[in-house]
Structure formats: structure tokens, C-alpha cells
Length: 178
Image 1 (cartoon, helix red, strand yellow):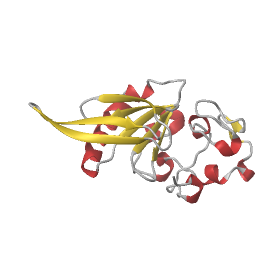
Image 2: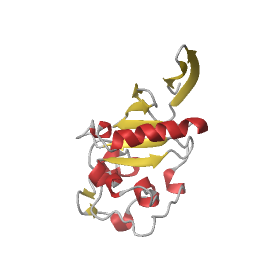
Image 3: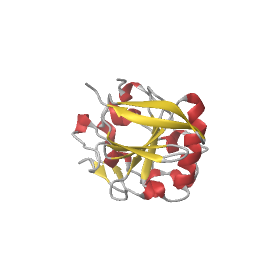
Image 4: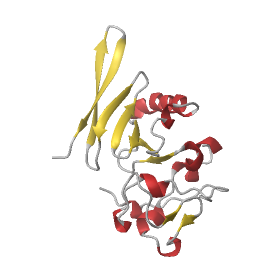
């Protein structure tokens, strides 16, 4: 597994976290004993990080997609969208980490329609859109959403095409780490 601290991303021109601290709530960060779904004890919601100058490399290296991709509109800034977008460095799957205090926000527009469009565009590259509420994952497919249950680091998503009378359908399942 790749260490996020080894991946350095650069913010797009004009992008800054500002008051946004949602990444401090939706991810596990073992270096500061932070658990997904709970605010990091160092986070100052709406103000930033209380240990910004000495924060761990994991936090220092991370930038959400809104920060790095200028084509994402202002509606995708995490503190507005209530979700953080990132690309898995290994699979290149789009990960959508949802604020657990608003677990259904990803199903609202304009978000849900865009997630469906990204699901369609990702299929030719055999990539997928995974929505997480804490560690519970759902795969967004062009024709339906498939709950996977708890999806932990090391678990794999397996996808197979199946021919039906209406055309090709994609079946997905989780393969847990053994």
C-alpha cells in the first residue's frame, strides 16, 4: 500500500483550504489517532488545524481533488459539498468520502448526476466511483448503486461484465483481505 505522505500534490492556482477542514473528519489518520467520522482532536472546524506547522506528513501531503483540479466548481469544495473527493493512488478509483453527519448528501443534485456521469466515463478505463460513509462503501455504476458494506484498506473491488437480454451489465463485489 502506498503511503499518502509520499504522494505530493500541488494546489491549483487560486485554490486554498481556507476555513474548510472536512478532511480532518472523514479520514483515518493513525499518526494523530484520528478515526474516520470523528473530528481530529487537532482540528479547529471552520478555522484550520491546531498543529498546522507540525502536522504529520500524511496530512501535509494531502490535497483533495477540489484543491488540485481547477475544473471542479465551487459546489465541490468539501465544506459546501459535505464530501471530499480523492483518487486512490493505486487503482485510480474516485473516492468520495461523505461527512457522516449528512450521509445522503451524495444522492442530491448536482452531486448525484455528476457522480453518475463520472461512473460512465470511468468504465472504459476499468475505474469506478466509490462513495464512503466512514468505512461503508457504495459503488456508483451507470445503472445502479451497489452497497459493498465495510470496505477496508487492502480490500479489492472485483468487476465482471455479464450479458443480459438488455445488453451488458456490470456486476461488482468486494473481496476482503485474507
